[in-house]
Length: 154
Image (cartoon, rainbow, N blue to C red; front, side):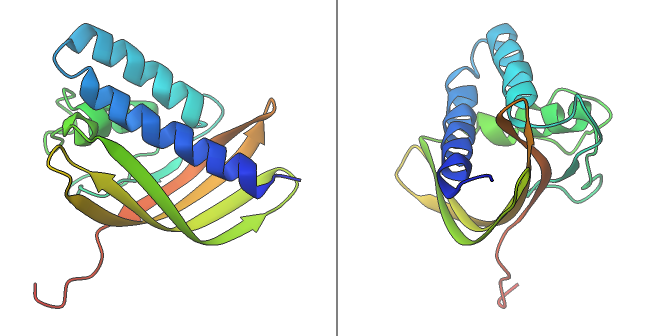
């Protein structure tokens, strides 16, 4: 059975990884290498297509391949010209607030808000649903959907 703590550990690791990508933005080679490893260690792209729908996309918003995820995090892929490199912001912290968890033997789902802290201490609230599968004892994301909260003023 996947535990709540395992999900929280996976979320903490993911958030720290996003922060680290931003810290490496001035060394493109190191940033690409780290981000490649980050995606491999946190997502299940090596086993299957992943349901990856990141926050700031509108043209090619669904990214079932690793290349699409890498481009979202650090940009630089001409097949995804809208990407600016979300993780290059940079962010100083990522904080998860789970609204609901579904825990099963080899599968977990988490839904809630996560908050990205910028260099000035401002937070951006984003809604998310992550699906995790347990592979070789580790949780891997196979569903990633995030979006900005509805703005009735827009």
